[in-house]
View 1 (cartoon, rainbow, N blue to C red):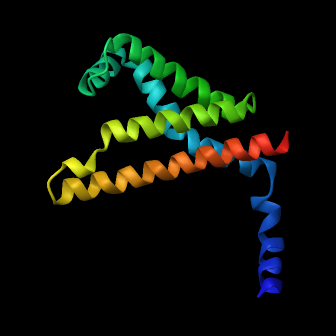
View 2 (spheres, rainbow, N blue to C red; view 1 turned 120 degrees about the vertical axis):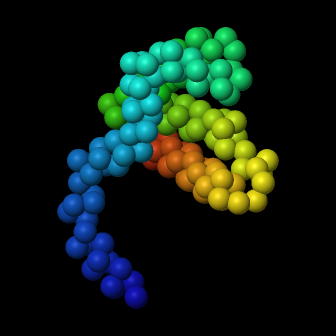
Length: 141
């Protein structure tokens, strides 16, 4: 069994072990935050509306802070500058936002609750991904 695993790993390592693949993985992990930050930046009234929707006040200040966090932490991860800090920032933000926006347990049984629960646990997966990025970055230093 271990011989098969080693052979398969050696087969895929040239591609999935390449430095450019790590960047692609980081880009995929940050994609939603880059898109969200750019959208909020280009539609600031919409960003304020989103903050109001979730009861965050003062909404303009929270919108600015979220834009800075989404774009700044994503760039830190992609550039490798305080990568661990950017990852922990986006992980904490995602965890807080998940409990704020995806309270599936408050919804009646049905499709809306099902979809919110799926999204909730997918976001926990993102948090795990950011924790892994921070762990890997701190481990190598």
